[in-house]
Image 1 (cartoon, helix red, strand yellow):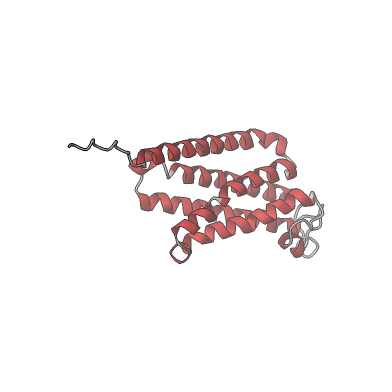
Image 2 (image 1 turned 90 degrees about the vertical axis):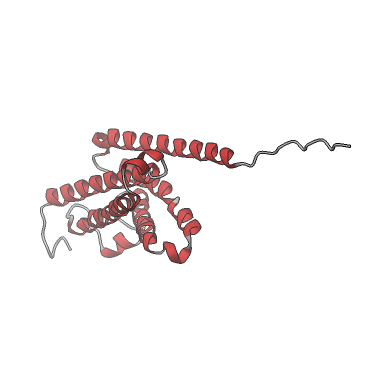
Length: 196
């Protein structure tokens, strides 16, 4: 593809780097926003319909930018990528393991984003279970950028801050859920003594 449509080597690299970075930021925002949806703060500030729309939009922005991030590699003249390399994980010429993880995560993010429209068919419980895969996707996308990114050194602060924020909010959500479940437990009253 690079021979058919010649593109500057630096331009291709800048485009794939910038789109990958913005895609990661969009994924981070989507994950953080999804975690905040379960807190009272967001529910009081923003209407439910708007919060879900923002969450859905951020998810699809991530998918779109991730697609572009991979598509630009077809025009790279330094590493020769084919369509098969992009579609089939772990077959590319550069860091096949870590780039392949990025490919798997693209499919995973596409499935999670599409699940917004399958919620009524698969049920809320199954939809939430599927949505929990977002945490795995976020972790592996972070590893993908950290290990396969040619400029990962400059972007390490972004990965660290995003990762710590998601970790903090995840722990907070788990603790809040545990506390809420304890509040919902029925209280057992001691039986009244039988009067003779």
